Every structure is written in C-alpha cells, then in structure tokens.
Image (cartoon, rainbow, N blue to C red; front, side, top):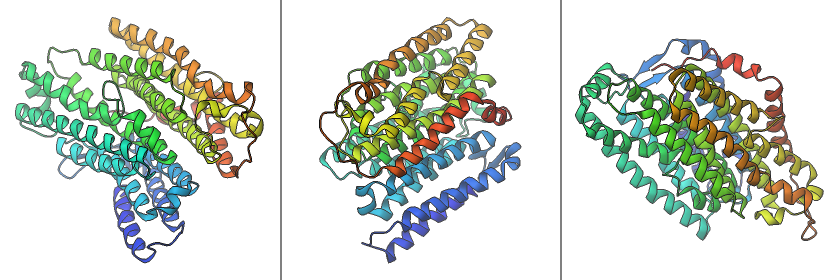
Length: 476
C-alpha cells in the first residue's frame, strides 16, 4: 500500500502540473508532503501486520518490519528534503513539478529496493532510484551542476552494467533469481569456482557505488559541490540507506554458503577503506559541500559495520545509527542552506558567523558534534552501540580483522574531530571578514533546532528508540 500511495502520488503530480504549468506555487510541494505523510502513516499504523513477513509478486518482494522501519526513515528524510526545497529559490522557480515527481520516483525505487529479494527486482528498483537521482543532481542548472550530474550518470551507468553482469553470472550458476531461496544458497555452495567470487564482487559494485563507499566513491565530491543543498541532503541519506539494506540481505546470503571465501573480511576492508579515505580527504577541504561529501563516504564505512558483523546486536545498532545519522545530517544541511542563502559557502567565509548567526551556528555545531560521535549527542550513543556490537562479534568469532576494524574506527573518530569542528572554529573563534545583512532564516533555525533537540534527547534516553528497535528481527 505505501508503494501504491507513492505511485499514485507521482501520477497526481504529473496531472496537476498540466494545469499549473509555468505558475509559481507551492502546491506541488504540499501535495508531496501529503503523499509522504500518508505513506508514513499507513506503514506506522500497519506495523503489527508486518510482524509476520509478507511475500508479494511471486517472492520478488519481501515486506517485514525491518524494511518497514527503513521505509519510514526514507519517507521522513524526503519530507525534510521537501521542506528544504520550499525554502530554496532555484528549486521553487524552475521545473517545480518535475522536481517533486523525480523525488517521489527515487523514494518509490528506494522502497522497492529495500524489499527486493529477486535480482531482477533489485536491478529495476535500483535503476528507478538511480535515474531519478541523476536528474535531481543537475537541478542547480549551472555548469558545475551539469558536470556533477554527468559524472554521476556515467559512473553510475558503468557500475550498473558491472552489477548486472554479476547478476547474470549468479543466475547462470544458481538457476534462480531469488537470492534468498534455498536453491540459490545450495547451488552457490556446490560451486567452489572462482567465478562465484568474481560474480559476487561485480554484483556488490553497484551497491557500493550507490552508498558512496570506497572504492566506488569518486563521484561524490563533484556531485555534492554542484547540486542544490536539498538534493545533497537527499542523496547523502536515502540512496545510502536503501543500498546498505539490500547489501545486508545479499551479504547474509553469501555468508550462509559454504564457499571458501571470507565475505566478512571483504566487507571489513571496504568499511576501513571508506572510513579512512573519507576522513583523511575531508581534512583538506575548503568547501563545506565537498567536506560533507567526504563525511558521507566515511559514514558509509561506519554503517557497514552492521553488515560486517551480521549479528542481531549489530543490526539493532545499525537501525539506531541510521536514525541518528539521518537527523544529524539533515540538521547540518538545513543549517548550511541557511548560510548559503547569505552567500556563505566556503569554510573560511564562516568567520565570525557565531556572532551574526548565533542560534544557527549553535544548531550547526550540534549536528556536527553528533556526526563526530561525542557527548552529549545521540551520535555518541549510536557509535557506542556500533562499536560494542563489533567488540561482541570479535569476542564471539576471534577474527583479527574485526579487532582491527574496531581500532581503526575509534582512531578515525578522533580524526573526524579535526574537520567536523573546522566550521565552528571559524564561526566562534575567528573575526568576521565583512559585515553581513542576514536574510530571514527563521524556518531553517526552527527545523534544524527540532532535529538537534531529538539528537540530544536520544543521548539522554536512547531506550526511547531502542525499546522499539529491539522488537525488529532481521531475517531473510
């Protein structure tokens, strides 16, 4: 039903656009918010129904509370994106209806991707998400935006082709497209050739690209720098969560086979590469958008820790971390959009903004501290849960790579302090470069403040969310 609501919503926006062509109106945005609210409400109030997993369309889609939770997160993130877009002049004036249509298209693709248990369905839903994202990335209608969008499209097309070829090999080996089926696991286990490893790595390439994990991350900085702020916020959360959810499902399948290959080692190395490359590259950035692009790459590595462990404890930590990452990331991007309205985009241009934009600077500081993972924010609690699950997994298996991942993650949390606190350093400790005549940012102040309050509350009462998450089981 939530997916039918989204699909009908897309058709509704297209029809409404025929009558409002060329008119400046917020009706498209309000309709999109109503559609997303209906999707969230239906999923939330039907929560008990999904306690028993439901399979649809010949076992191509598997709906359970695990995917429902992430569908709610995706819808909430998109609603925040709409609120940001309503305050962005370029998005409110140019191709207004098309923007929200593609936005809902990406959300629909994300929903289907997170529920997919069939390789064809995975590819179709991933392409629906990807093609919508390529177009949204170019919505700044500038040379830099067009360049970023084109790079995103070209790299994405190559990654999709590689992934599809990997899927075809897996289908040839197993004789089935349903990667959660017993035949899929048994036939992979019976085939001990290197072709299985090659096919799996090719298949994972598309997901790693979508979540901006190393070594498939090179598109992110240019796309983030050239895209409008609401689109960046959307791309940093929605495709990432959708990609990691389906990656967790596929990794679970490969982990249950008897193929003599250590998938846990591969995912741990990818996580460490993402964390290291993201954090170290972010240190040298002078543009806030590019810095957040490398932050997104590093955060992908931390999210992958849940996939590396694949225990019930790590998946609960992954669920909690995802919610806190969404809130903190959007708090930061909403604040950055407010500063961008006042022509403040480079890190050096934040000098003295702690005086002229005191409230906004404090809220931005709260979001950045949460992304770093230090008290008194929920980001600290989320990383604590993630590292605790990693340590528990190490104690259970004794694998050295898990210990190395834990140490590497802890050290990089310290490294991230040096770039996450770079903007607050300029804002509060540097003298202003020039006098500013601030534009109205009250709406951004309020929206970001609500998110930061939620982040602080979950530091004090993490059980408020974890009590609910502990009832969610990750099963294929």
